[in-house]
Image (tube, rainbow, N blue to C red; front, top):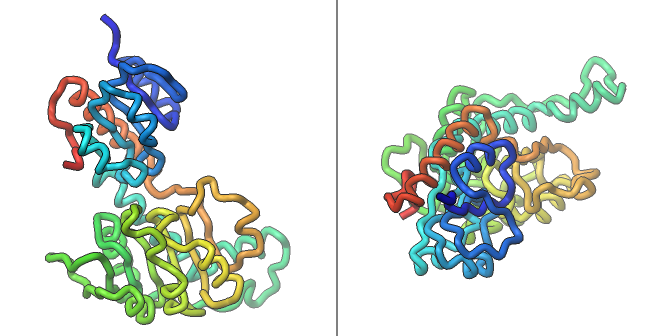
Amino acid sequence: MSKPAILIHPPLGLFEMQIAALYDVVHLPTDRRDIQACVTIGSVGFGRPILDALPELKAIVCFGVGVDGIDLDYCRRRGIAVSNGPNINNEDVADVAMGLIISVARAFTQGERVLRDGSWQPPLAVPPQRRLSRRKLGIVGMGAIGQALAQRAKGFGLEIKWFGPHAKAGVAHPYEPDLIRLASWADIIAVCARGDKSTEKLVDARVIEALGSDGLLVNVSRGSVIDEDALIAALKAGKLGGAGLDVFQDEPTPVDRWRGVPNTTLTPHLGGATREALFAGSQNVLENLRRAIAGEPLLTPLW
């Protein structure tokens, strides 16, 4: 008996060996029309021309929480189920967010550069920084990642307010419905919002200007949520104090784009990539695939 056909894009490395033990794995480009399920990373997804050519498609299974590369309205109309991996890596992403806050606030990257290039001149290798405790943190997006970051930030003595599309019951920190006002109040803005059309360039030049020349901006959401051109211009002009970024407008981000951009800590989308999260995410994908092929309700459906 032949195995059900599964389309995977982008390739998922060694994890594909587990999938291939159970299914007939297909990659793009393909003219196969018997594909029953697709596996993807939500920020990548599949274009409509690809999905239009898959008449037997039952489900799209996303590795990770994001689904911004999926046309959800199209999938609903066609009756294609979509799943993601919620509450799997939120603690890990929050760790990276807190790490970026500390790194930028205390000039870790600048300090390492001074040490490695031999320009360390006592008594102070880099200009003195402000103390982190008692500073004001504005969190953009109080979902699972935002709440996990708030827990960590509280331990560092930060005062916290947050912004989102609407207030939420059970959140201990004050809600600020105006992002410009939040940025004007805050010393640090950490972006933890979901990445989709509704948040595209949410943090624009106006927000960056309100945060100001002593302000710090951290992003662990999606690169699309920040106007990256405005961010770079503000950093170069000294109109923003610093930035810690784990996500970018284009990934991999071009090296030349960041040459000469000061006061930054940049990491290559490390956020959710812990061993524990990747294992749990792979098991989530396998169970959603099993259910999709069996005609059962998905484990973590979007609807």
